[in-house]
Image (cartoon, rainbow, N blue to C red; front, side):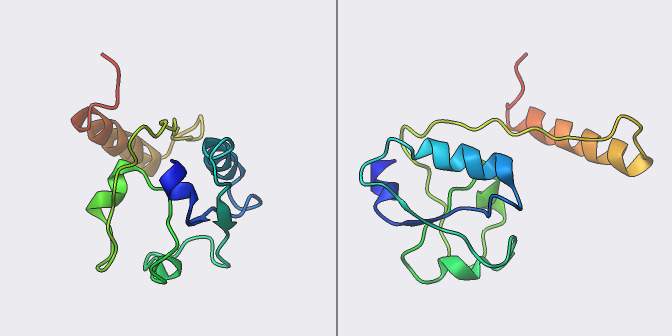
Length: 116
């Protein structure tokens, strides 16, 4: 964590994603040196353009390794705490919501993210 904090770290804009912003900034709260957070102008960029400067890092989940754009590398952080991510769906679910839920459950089971 300290090694990662030595580089600029991408952090989503709090107004666009307050939960992830707060969780990520809390992970580095006690890191020395204090990280320099970078908030991109675009909240989501599939090309990860802001990381191509060769200096900026971005915290990412394990799923990022399967969709990383060419030229970027996913590296696990030793000793990094985990984040809990929740899928939030409406109480009255459409067929699309039910499908998303089924796919998310299947993926979570395959990756052993669910407790038995």
